[in-house]
Image (cartoon, rainbow, N blue to C red; front, side, top):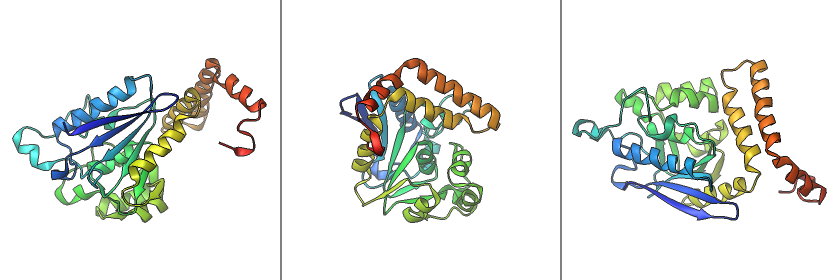
Length: 257
């Protein structure tokens, strides 16, 4: 198995760390690996006790994209408009957050997996890039969609047209990286961030997250209506009543977390 799952139990539930571990090909993803990766995220999504996931590439590399060497031996990535994406989970819309822990290369399909995640904790040695530009391999796991939404059209075009490497510092200045950490620290720092997210009231956080994603492509009017609908569902859950009680007891005042 190339894909491994490690679970951390916390007070409210579990943190999933989903690991790509295939050092011989710098964690490149072939067809069977893509299915394993998608299945791992399906398990995360269906586990009611799972709160946040971390996606990490072992052995100093996040993911070098699709494994092009397997195209001719029957293990190539699936190419179909329905079902999972070529890299696995790239078409999934999860109800819970995923954090990418990025070391080394996150390129081509690996860049697309990183963009699929909600946040990216990036080591100083990380390199992002559309390296598949050199081989005529298209971005078909959301790269042309998510990248410009994350960093803007002009910067996305810079990456997509040139295929050049983008360092951690440049990625951070563009908003592609959310945090820069020391080398070998992306996984522990991403898991720490996952714990911080997991302590929040989950219904409210998840609904706000989904509203944020769904507003793309909506008019301002429709997006505001959609936001209010998600807000009503949150209020109907009663979750805010517990939060209000805690606030009256002095917890969380003055911006304290």
